[in-house]
Amino acid sequence: MKKEQTFLWVLGLLALLVLLAAPFVGMETIWPASLWNAPASPEAEIFWRIRFPRVLAAFLAGAALAGSGAALQAVFRNPLAEPFTLGVSSGAALGAALAMYLTLPPSLVFWAVGTNWNIPTLPWCALVGAWVAIVLVYGLTRLRTGFSSTALLLAGVAVSYFFSSMVLFLQYLSDPTRTFHMIRWVMGGLDRIVGYDDLLSMAPFAVGGLLLILLRRHELDLLLTGEELAIARGVEVVRVKQILFLAASLLVAGVVAICGPIGFVGLIGPHICRLLVGPRHGRLLPASICFGGLFLVVADTLARTLLAPTELPVGILTALSGGPFFLWLLLRSNQPL
Image (cartoon, rainbow, N blue to C red; front, side, top):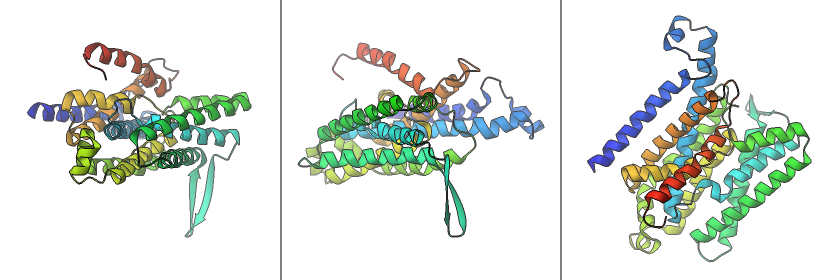
């Protein structure tokens, strides 16, 4: 017990240190003294306007993806379950691709209660696409009797393949400029984040979804032991699954709407944390949240610096790290995953 708690505290402290240090690292290092000695300098502007909000967004996105992955792996009792297998990222990518293909204006202005709301078009089109995917997956699953986890997973895979093929079709129809923007979007990246507007758009979805999952941590422990035992302990299995599915989808929709689809974090992060702190979700969820944020901040920092001044989409780095991890996991395990 003490060992698992120690690992959890170490993960939290390490995540905090990385969160504080990462904004100073880039193509050009920004020293802390320059922020206080010259608060109006170009270095300070780059730090507060570009690097700091980007690091915060990376941490929030990674935490949301890893937290939702930990919850879905318990709901499905399947180590391969993660948000992207449910088709939510493909739906969001299709929404963004449609906005690019139709050349919609970059923002829409709404007048309400005497104020002007300037709403960015692309992220919210992606969010609409994600919600369409949620409704389709949930509706396809409800066509069967009950609420089968297997049917839910298969429906998500089917919807994901369908939306991905639609994105490829739109890329084929588009001119080279729009095709390039679509390809960069589906790669996943944080290079579009400047200022705090995108961060504030993502925060309600990420924070709200994570709180909802954390409140269901005890039900997740019971679901992991089997549906029959969970029902015997008084868990409303169907209702709890619906809530957790919607919460996880909300998390991913908020992230993909701003950053594009970023894979691997929600799949592998919970596995590593399970080795460190055990399967109890009272510790596993906070550990996954810290590890996911830490991992994506480090990956984005590498994406900004490895090929500077060229910048890699962080989705490429997270995807490339998946293969070696799975090989390591298979080699060290003496039983089927």
